Length: 258
Ligand SMILES: [Zn+2]
Image 1 (cartoon, rainbow, N blue to C red):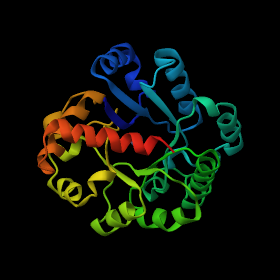
Image 2 (image 1 turned 135 degrees about the horizontal axis):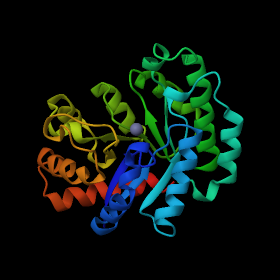
Image 3 (image 1 turned 135 degrees about the vertical axis):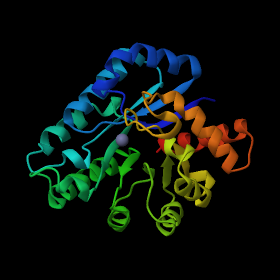
Image 4 (image 1 turned 90 degrees about the horizontal axis):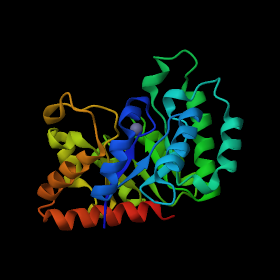
């Protein structure tokens, strides 16, 4: 058994000076990471990271994809598709992909039209190649739930779930996962969502290098935070720590095996 951080951006520039120590920590604590990408370049970096540090081990699983923030009218979708088909053996999943209207106000070339075009293409790649999917769904859970039945995607997680309890129920009934991060240690609302979740469809994540508040103020987000999240969840589920970590490990193993 090992611990699994189901969503972290280890190829991010902020982690570069710490790669060696992070991979040593992962090795020593049996902590596996599902490593997310945000655009074409970071997808290449994620694959390189896997080859450089953890070749022939499953310590890092590589997810590639285009994040809604970078899904603009100038995104070269064909170049990404070519990259995807030439690296199929190294690609373990598709992520971080999704929809988020927040970015259309921030970037001139980003619109819901460009986001949808790229999101649907990413879902098609996942469907055709039978890869699990990690979804970004801020302010868009309903829209995403509407399109998912058009794709045959077996394993999918709503990462950093913050939608309604009703949609959470729908997600679990569809056989999809919802994942929770370090904020559950200090956010009562998120703790309530966790209480409402189907225990067999919960995953844990750090989403590093995103930083957190409360007890994590001024701390570099490391995959080791997973242990604190599991401890909190064991309290919420009123189960021993060991039993909770086994449950979360089995959930993540089911998610990754398409
Ligand atoms: Zn992320």
